[in-house]
Image 1 (cartoon, rainbow, N blue to C red):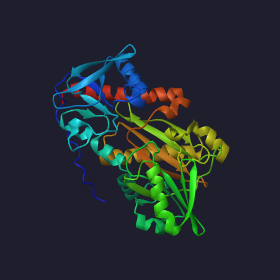
Image 2 (cartoon, rainbow, N blue to C red):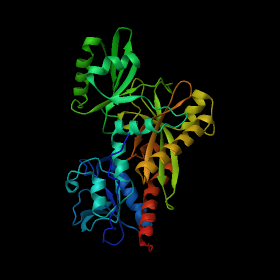
Image 3 (tube, helix red, strand yellow):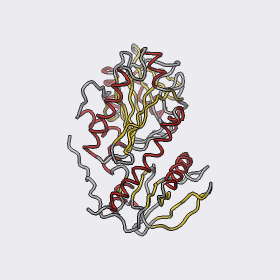
Image 4 (cartoon, rainbow, N blue to C red):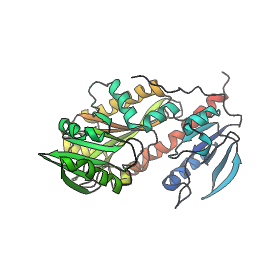
Length: 374
């Protein structure tokens, strides 16, 4: 396949001193929504390193309104554009025009933690699938995926009797439906509910469910469903976080398991999932420990995925890579996330703290690199 991305050629750093900005979204119940505590941790880490850091939610060529943490309170001031920025926003910004936030800021002379080309690829699940399927990694499964087409639904389920139907864009596990062919009938599972129907009823039933999930107007993909073992009566996936740190070199920060509640389609924490250590799951299901062949394969595959994407659409400063393990112990890659959360790693506090530090360390590395004579 050919990529039509405009690979970022960053302008000269913005003439604004040496600052680190985190682009976020204003929240309803707290300053920056569910990311408020994470942003506080980032600001505390940046302060401890002597960095001039702030949060901003809108931008223009003339600058931003920057929010800094003073004690436990947020104070605001007009600021020039940040020299280095970390895009944690999920919404379109006024200052971006018709382009992405990341690309717009790059065009204004700011340096990103993650490149705009990587952000574009990671936000589009079908585009990411095409990239991963094109450059296959030996031994790693990639579930067959295509753009959802109502007319092809029955034929897809003839080829793959169980499929995951999910939004092409977005995160958090919202809007996901599992479709399964059982004899002459079909079963649709969503959240913790299920609906049975016949072939002629299937499209209408699926549309009803998508309406209930507030996702009727969203673009969808349909993906081959992998036959998964269950741990504590729930399916699970493995999240690996890769990040660049203080030297600029990529590092595997950690990996842990997201466990779905019984009868739930998705293991996402926002959909009622829970946390578990990978070692506990491997011991129970495969009689292996964290240094066994399955864990070692996940380490190997995560590095290969990072290197492959970084060479194609990098630089990548941070990525979440999600794997499945099937009944036979084979590993499958299901998603790549350019805005990974940290909540999963509450079960591993040291890793969670490292995952918070590394974006700040990498920002400091980029700032110091720009100060050196070229």
